[in-house]
Length: 118
Image (cartoon, rainbow, N blue to C red; front, top):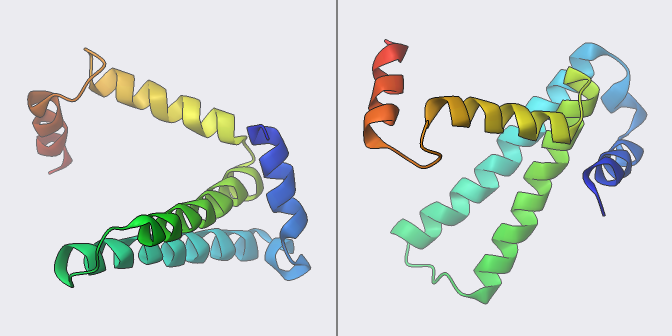
């Protein structure tokens, strides 16, 4: 499936209450991303600090949670921002290319960005 097809699939699964207003779309997108991102973080915590083995079962669970994150990213892109996933991906690539001039991670470029936040 291509990105546009996935976007249509996601939109088709949303409840009417999820899309009735800008506020409801923003709430669903933000809360969904927060919740599903938290599920990914919880798995990382359990592996890193609680002794859960990163086996194929945990890997498969993480893949499913990443899919849930993508669901809400697609919803946020289309229904909150009015853009495609492809547009979001391209914007992100442009931002990272501008930050990392050589096309790979650089400690110096990362620290320069961090210093600029203050």
